Length: 287
Image (cartoon, rainbow, N blue to C red):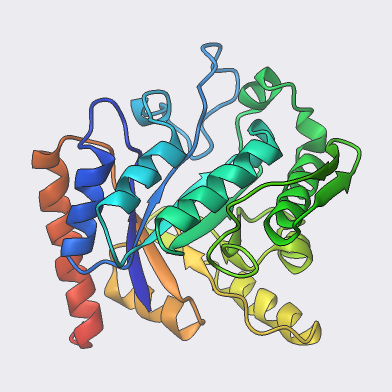
């Protein structure tokens, strides 16, 4: 089991590079940074987990720039997009950014992607809300072609381009692992089609968490039926509970990510230390 941190890099929080160093120095295995290009002022779409939308979502730095800063000052930790809203990003440009970041980091990028939850945000990019997953699939397939072919082309409904050259190619072959986020009815179909792993968000329900262990077992069964190796699972929103983490490990979860609120260093560092003590307890088996 590996452990990591997810935090927005914002204009009021500690710098992404400083956060990455702190995460690596404390023995964590990964740092994920989320993605939003903007937040519509209308706020017609309610926050997906309820309550008021934190300022993290509208004050965040560009995800790829934050991860590049993190890559420049670290050597070991995995660097993750958590998650990349690919329907809001041009696939040719995004393929270049992903390959460049994987190259700069020495092959440490995990490419988490998802369909998003803010309808107006996507529509501001000209994306049809009801067709967003078709757009995601075409853009991912187009990027896979760019990463793996010297002369790539793609002919879809939403993505079309003739033969192009684009280097560098990713260090990881055939490309950085693609983790599909969310838990919608079609999520597992998408993982089997063009994904390499799953990123579920664990939800708090009353005084307990839905650990999604039944869904994890379902994905494992689907992989076995398809003759595929078990898909790695990275949990977001992981509870700070050793017993829950033990359940996730028993279900085959390969990495737990703890989310923390964006804040200055004097707030973030003590929280990283606290989570670090929890991880040490879990790893020592004393929980």
